[in-house]
Image 1 (tube, rainbow, N blue to C red):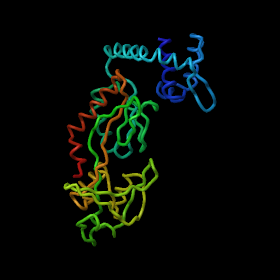
Image 2 (cartoon, one colour):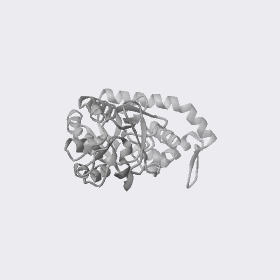
Image 3 (cartoon, one colour):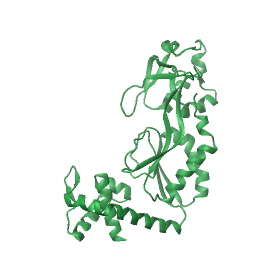
Image 4 (cartoon, rainbow, N blue to C red):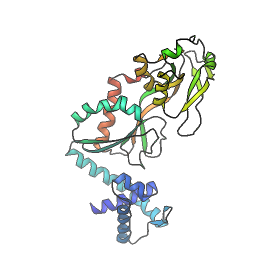
Length: 307
């Protein structure tokens, strides 16, 4: 298996462009990856990479070697994984990325049943409101929206995502309920800044007839976190265009009221992302299937539907 380990360090370093990224995937140190590559170079008598303090690039010989071994290496690792899984239950560390509030509200409650089914799996969940690179950062899976489908990543849709206009009962106590999106111009807006672009997100609402309206609320405050926005609105600071996963529990509790029912914004979907390699680790496969089934059983897609 030593030769396989050396080849794995080389292939992942070539694909990710760094020893550090390969190390994260393998769960070892960058120094260990570098040492494995050096040992492989010594064994085959070929310099595989051009190394500098800032970059790692394949040599001409390295590019040729990668082309020759890429297919056979993938087939070999798949065969090893299949052989191991035939004799074992799902096990190991399950590294998953999920947004803070969404993970706490909807995914952590699933862990009890999931771990009862698969007691040898150890969740290592990273709660972060950023779009991760599943492959290069070594995640088994990521749950969210707006993650770029880089080479080697596929996605299964869990639910559509809608945003709706919400306010607190106290905020609306002395205000007339709006009848049209244009009526929101005098309301205090809790706006959202995009974590990716840094721009303040515009409000565009659509109704069942397909009419679209750009909404101009008065900017009162700007947050970059939808959970914080939802709680600011519940405290009566203004109105906001909130994602349904964050708004729905507060609407159910009566802490928020929805304005302009029938108007909403659809902005993509909620997905579980994972590697598209032919032989996934068994822990990843059972987790993805479990989450998809849990969303169906709990009817979360309908719960998040803001239409």
